Image 1 (cartoon, helix red, strand yellow):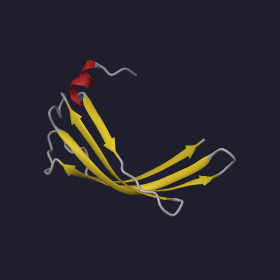
Image 2 (image 1 turned 45 degrees about the vertical axis):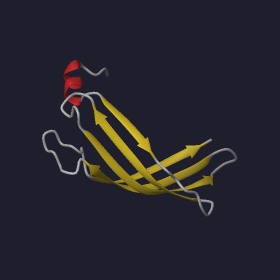
Image 3 (image 1 turned 30 degrees about the vertical axis):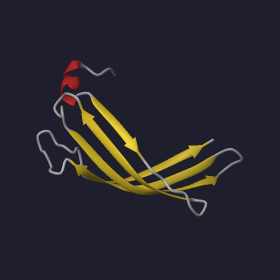
Image 4 (image 1 turned 90 degrees about the horizontal axis):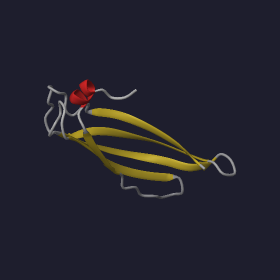
Length: 106
């Protein structure tokens, strides 16, 4: 479904960036500390940004067949910017979230 001009004016154009340094130890453990930043150029949040930090851990890869491997992980994401909650529009869009991930590698 294409985004109409009405929604585009409200949502705006954003640039999302993500950096996730990881460390590998004991064969199956990958602790990470992720940074997620979103900047809005226009729309309701035009000129605003939000930054989330996410400490987490990935487990794996666990072999499930000759070629396929499974990874899964968990993390806790929280907002650090903006420092205050702006209600109109809501920025950051949320503050706390538990995240789960899984990957199937071939």
